[in-house]
Image (cartoon, rainbow over all chains, first blue to last red; front, side, top):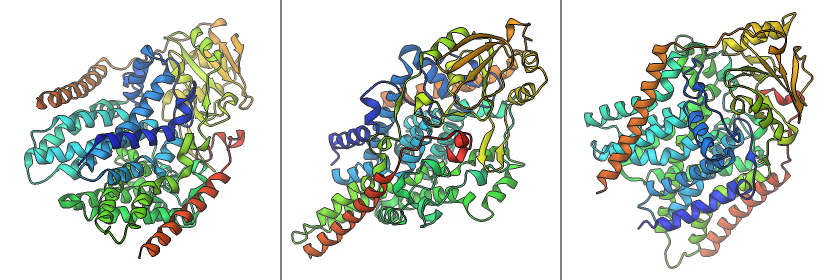
Length: 552
Length: 43
């Protein structure tokens, strides 16, 4: 029944409709956490080997390697387009027993919903990629349950999900567990080995980080899901919206009518799950778990409970911004949507051809309910290009140097050349060596998540010292990069090595020697982490080889 | 029967297009101000 051609056509249409502006010209989409640079120099931090808290390990390493071959702008396009294609074709395969229009309904709902919009606009492209891999995780899980020896696909998708982000890795484990585990104990231990092996790549750096501390105070409340409209938080979350970051919400989601109509679509999709065969309870469990996780910090007492639990269990910090764990609900709703459309089709009789219009509506409803996602979020996502000053500054800094970036207030910037969109400071990815920025998270009001890196705390103290230049030299800082146009920070004295294009680079080493405090992570730790990365890589290779050989 | 179905589906579709479309069209380009730049929820 399945014809991949129609799935591909629908997926390409969705991809072009969402990413179109990025594909028709040069430059980058730089928004929120989405930072790509022309060339990302290699650093041991990309693999977590420097002892810092792994934030994008090992994705940064892969992006760095990719920009050795092609420019960062091409890497960004390949990742986003590849992600959407993988997501659309993947969900088409999960509901491959359905007719083409039912699969089209699944594809549109999976690739075009508020969760996708919000994660794209917040710039969490790697987490979005993890979401778009979930259909492949579901397929691998169903295959593993059918035959516990069929472990190859599960290995590949678990490793790829873990590469995207820790939360993507955990979501993949959750989906795999719910859909694959049964009475057969062989499946249990195989799934456990695969899950651990695939996630070593970020788990080991996190568990052995020496120069970072995790803060959980106030973060669960600050990142809790929120109501977008008068319809309330539960309605927002049920319709795959409700992110905490209110400034990026699409305008139509502020309308209670739109949110409630989106809930109707979700309920129709959930009703379709009841017709999804013997796995319907597993799909329902997955949806319920995603909803509970997303809503937990938002219910009265929920964030306090999580904070108390996080005291003895700092790993619970992974549940910060638990709204991201709503992603599996998107998968379930897409599957349910296909089955609901299938059920609707069965009711069409020769005397009720008008029901076809309901089928068409089910396919296009996600687009109609969220027109803001079209064409670069209707202009919210605009292409930008780095001024040449950034490349010239990067050429002056050495790979063993340490640079402090001013203004020392948070890590997000609103450059004029980037349409004054808030974006994570690109300096740590663009400049060689160690680049220190203020990593405090300012949640609004008085709430501030303190810096997690002791080096950042030391810089804060040095900048407040009587002679900040000497204090910075004493902690190993050679360069101060001042990004202009965002306040007027006090700049430590030194030789101005560069001053153009909105950037000023001050060399503190011109007046005196810089203390050598190069951060050296323990050799044993580096070996352990290297083994972890190697395990995940080998698991990926073995899984891919298994898939190729089992097809013969 | 066909008329009822077409009316219901048409009404639903036109409501969605009108409400979502009008709201989306009214959305503005929102450059971030210096004052709000560092406030995480406002970016």
